[in-house]
Length: 338
Image (tube, rainbow, N blue to C red; front, side, top):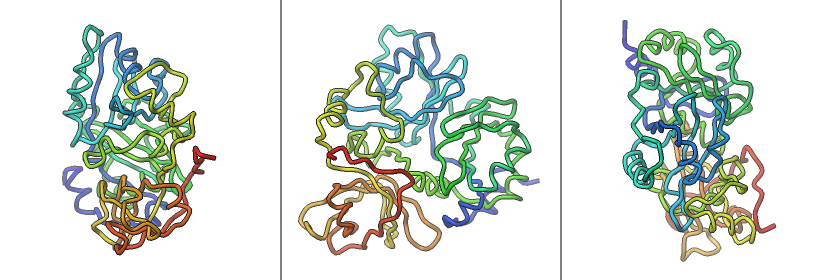
């Protein structure tokens, strides 16, 4: 019998948004996981991140940002906890420096940061979504998490329900390699199998940004719609960059948002600048996240000036580059200058 990862690799293919909407499973192979253990973990993180950590319950999942003193995002996390541990999921490529930076500020707080990605229950992370995923998951979970950004702990692992996409629920299932060996054959038999970039394509169509190495310190949280997604709590206490984040919110100075586009140029990637044809001499924004769309092009979340979004005439790399085709966002952009 093939191992679970060999089975997924054999069946994996580039998936279209139509296939994602019907039902898919994909390994999430590029994410790291930081664990914080200790009685003061929540209080420590509460003073570091953009979201409320002290009132995070074991049944909740939250987005949270980690900012520089200038209010620019160094990392974005998917955050959850169990009875003893708080977990922060982020791209593995930036996990080590972010974990080191957070550790520098622990001081006398009773908490310890560690890499949780190789612990038995976290060895395998699968992403599932689309209309068929719920029925398939009910073979093992009854009930399922009732709404987005909730979770449950189960003998077969941790099931996180994240933001919906294509009108259907999406899930991350964290499990041991032994559980994966048992469940993957059935998942692969009933759902379209994609690669990790299929999961990122679903994230993009859910409108969920993720800070990567290419975009660290580029965006205030509101520029990537983070507060619209519940990733910023404006009633909590101070954290690095809090004054700038709050000023952007309440003084109406932010003139930028992130929106969903499709691009025919396969060179579209996080960190690449975009240019409005009405002002070709300077960039109007930057690609936040990008993934192959299964049709030979790239779908992406792109941060840009509100005026450029309104004009909808923007190109990749230069004013002569590939045009950005604007797609409908899954939620309403609420410009802070209105």
